[in-house]
Length: 281
Length: 357
Image (cartoon, rainbow over all chains, first blue to last red; front, side):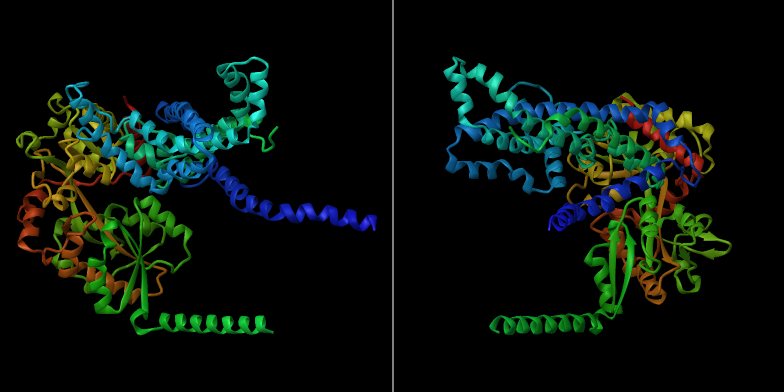
């Protein structure tokens, strides 16, 4: 009886994990290995590290990675700064019965097409767009300024999207916090600011970091937003990768660039790993 | 028992529905289908439906951009999946070298009606066999808003690098034609480009970039010109301005004194096609006077029909500047057709231009 229980107990985890494992092997591990192998070939055939060498020696190539990191860092920081108060208001200031409606309103931008949303921003930020017209009419500027087709436009398009994502992750974290923490802090003489800085903020760090990590991953790999809003006035990594594929079909170089991008994401994951655990205190 | 009976009924209904679907699938209207890898100008119902109605052949289309992406799609498909492909005329040989294309029967195509300058045998024929036939062409040159810029300035490529138009220019984001234009500005012939010409081309490109507000693909550059965000599009031509002529008649294009770059797209038949007769019928339709008129005025982008007998209206001919074509063609230079090594070097120069601040 004991042996049988042990045997079935040993098999059950594999049965449970099996589909997920197969899925990961088929749709992540195998393609990743294939991509890694292709990355050490050159177009036309033959093994070589030339693709990686080109990346590390050609400034216009490694500049794309720096551009991606700069843009992503800006987007992540601005999105956190905007999303936290938003999530706080949703979780703490809005009555429970209105929270669901407020959340639906908050995620409405997700319902529109990503491409349409990006083109909409292009029109809003254009020289004759709403923003420039308003600034001119208010007398803040005398001539329209270039907002569209800039890094500013790319960051704006990204932030519009990722504020919503971060709001959700921080909101979920705030809702998990027991009111006892605040009561205990108040009993011990802490004011609202001190309670927030020493109790609430550290306890909501997991929500912030999960959202920040997702923002980093999605923004670093996004092609549409910088392509439409950035005006190609600088290249980010996904654009550089697509450039290799378009006409030339240089899949080895595109694969090498993709592997490097994945390495960056892995480093970001390791940096955030301590906050990305599933369990909560 | 009731549950079992309900299950049987449901199964019977499902079986009947499936039979009906199969019967529909075998109906005469859908008897034959071909699959075509195309550019966006081949996808509209206005273009496809007259052929489907007349021939009973349904055309399933899949759009792609860039020869590399198109050839990758073929690599990932089973032989026989695709019957027809649209491809840059200069790239037809890339497909032939991969053994992808079937020779076309010249006697069954209206070759005599095509503009001789766009037949481009050097790219579309190999070993005496024709593998591609030009269906549409145009120019990568200067597109502009004639209400905003001096028309005389648009007669020379040097205006694109002058301070007068700083911040008023967009550059079409495709390295071959725009680098071809830069080569013309530097006094070079596009047919003779070598690695030694790249520094001079890069110099012109960087000056253009310094004047440019954006480097955009088709939609972005078209939008920028149409909304007044920029007044000039480097690499633009009838493919940008003609489709917008009704809404914005101020949009125009010029072939400057240094020349313009002739672009041309071809149709090819896949060697592995199991439906070569149907594929040939489709190619014949595209090259017919009616098909040419519809393709030339596609909602996606306009362009010159390669067949001089295209059934265009007078208004459409005027917008496409049909009567001026002999002069334009005489001044146009070939699309750069670099070999693999030069192609890579050209793209790297383009990347440096994009990253330049």
